[in-house]
Image 1: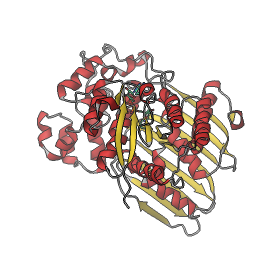
Image 2 (image 1 turned 60 degrees about the horizontal axis):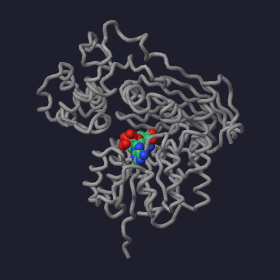
Image 3 (image 1 turned 90 degrees about the vertical axis):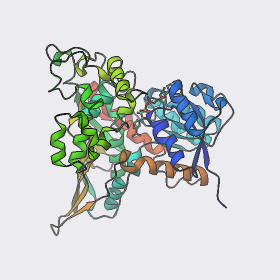
Image 4 (image 1 turned 60 degrees about the vertical axis):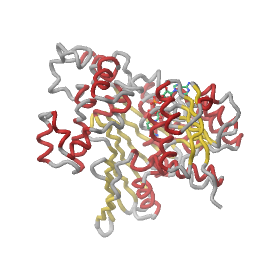
Length: 458
Ligand SMILES: NC(=O)c1ccc[n+]([C@@H]2O[C@H](COP(=O)([O-])OP(=O)(O)OC[C@H]3O[C@@H](n4cnc5c(N)ncnc54)[C@H](O)[C@@H]3O)[C@@H](O)[C@H]2O)c1
């Protein structure tokens, strides 16, 4: 007999809560139904209300209010900002909800540990959104390693190349620009990479050493004569990578990305640079120019041209990147890791890449894997040392967020909620604790300038 869709409440109806997870219910109504929402911003709350056909008394202005009610659904999606994860997730589990919790699971070590404890104590599922483990690209990489083709892993060299426009959007102008109000970069962004290393190496960590700095962004680099807002007559608007209209009105970085991926031809691309107002009439540009998804969607609820101009005049998204005085996030960081099984890994994050993506080299006792995981190419190369042969696996190119991982994590979680099967869940809270401890250790090491033994944090 066909089972009814599982029911969900959404706590935090922002980019992730509403646009990714709640939207899944609209695309797969047989799997999930959203029955209530908690969100303080009225427009966002109303949008969920309308899309999911909710009654007024199922729309709440905060997590405290929705969780003061009787249990309203099978599961709770907690997608509030980083500093507001542990409390609602813990209360939701105590109320009887299974919980899908955004990463980072919490921004203190104690809260992370408490989440694991409460999940065990209540028997509730607590899935942390380390979505990359579910992306087909990384599943394939994991299978190659598990097949033994490269023998035992000895060392991994891993890079997270954050694009210059993603870095400026989220970590200078956006919600994550101040570590005291959100979380350090290594936790906010690179906990995914810590998680992938832990997953691939299959060993807890022994010790960690890290360096990193914020070198480029600050008043000391503000161009001469540049106003604090890009639209107030910036003299370097043509040459500044970070001129806000370049991203939020002209979408130049996104068009570059499509050109590199081959979805816009060289010939058409060359005409773009001149910023034709009628570019939107040419089909390949039309598609890109009309794009109002992430990161454009974040700057305002009114995504018309006028709405976007207003956002650039009033919000941080229109500020000169060199004039955001409370920005304190590293723009590059390296981490050296020794695992309990004696494997070593080095990790580099930087925020200046032309294209967003990860690249890595994994050396084993019999072979090497080299990988590129970018929008324009997703390749895994396997080199057999004995024969010298190289095989390239071109994984399916998926434009969707997180290489398809967002959808798969939902599918797996909903199945587990429905059938109480935990086997497919790759990122339970107890599993995700390691990546978070690694990130905390790297942050402590960087700030205190010392090697951190993981036993200090366990
Ligand atoms: N898994 C991933 O790869 C991934 C990717 C992006 C973001 N994230 C994480 O997802 C989380 C949400 O990010 P986002 O981009 O959607 O942020 P967002 O700011 O768009 O959404 C958060 C929402 O929570 C709401 N909120 C604030 N106070 C609240 C309260 N008391 N009760 C209920 N809701 C409240 C805000 O109004 C906002 O709408 C962050 O922790 C972020 O780090 C994870």
